[in-house]
Image (tube, rainbow, N blue to C red; front, side, top):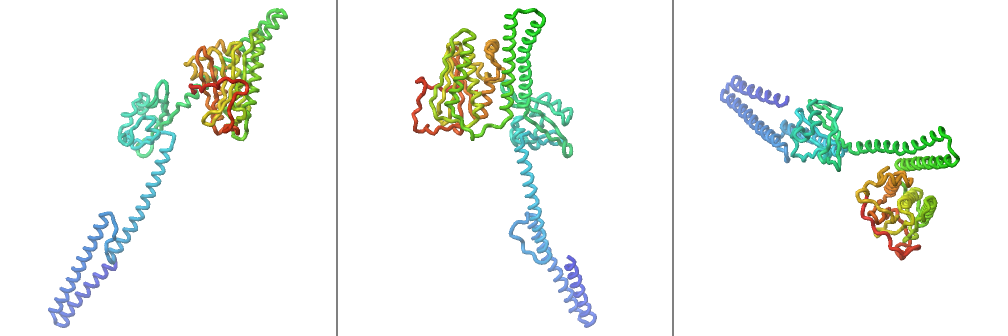
Length: 472
């Protein structure tokens, strides 16, 4: 810029000096005027040309500096080059900022917490997909809507009006129903110039877990309190009253039964705790399912004989029906044995004496394996089937206590099934008996002879257990 001004001043000085020299030193007034005119014409032409170049550069800049670049020598060429460099620098910074913003928004979208950005008056500027699911927002069409117009829960409105922050409230979600409850915790946090950040989190599982914990503690307390009360009563009776040897023997036998019941309850609770706190079984251990089922059947037969002798009734007819003699399961032998033993024990305890209990093993069409326990007991009403695997749930409480059950057997079976990727399927009907089946997936099933062997029962020619149809 400085050299342009210097060149303009110098050219004017030279032109004025030349005209003065011609006019006053040489006496050539016309020559001096011509020199001054030429100098003025050159200056005007230069100014016109310079303004033309400046106009082209300014028009190019106003159009967003597109390609191709305008031809502009000297100063205007430098202006074009510097502007283009600045444009590239700003474009690069803008792209970097947009990429960072996009990464930030993607992180918010991936968050399991609902996020809503509100302006100074409560209009929604942005929200993620989780918030849309929580509150039922409808994409970009709800941008600019006031939050109170879309979330009208009275507790939420009160929370908004009171301008509280951090404490939060718990409200029902948009899809909340009595059958499928959805509970959300909502909190506001200020940010920026009067703006607020709304965070929502689904606490349905937390509330259900807390409720289950309370119910579990209450049930455990109730289950243990009953035998303790009986034991305390017998102890007090034996301490305060003179009893005969026969009465003492009978009281001690009843006390032993209650103590055994509490011991079984504690063992089942420890088993559940161990199942919930340990990693799932890997695929390294293989279990010979045919021998395991036979062992469980022998144990169930021994239990049936003991119960039958005490009751003076005939024992149950318990047998194994093996359709896949070489089948092996990748999993924990101890856990699978516990699951099968629980199913057989339940069948023995709830099936009338002299009834039939069958433990079967077969391969499934999809390559998996099914272990089923079928009995000829009284059956279970359909309305009870979805809940029979809950802890301490009993269809008939008095009948359960008479048979010595703890109410945790099927809960243990369900946990073991889940840990092995299996599905517990229950098929039962009043008066027609029950079938409890464990369907193990193909990846945990191994049978080297399955592709070519003909599957035949080893101990019976009865038909295999029909596929149950009531999944839990």
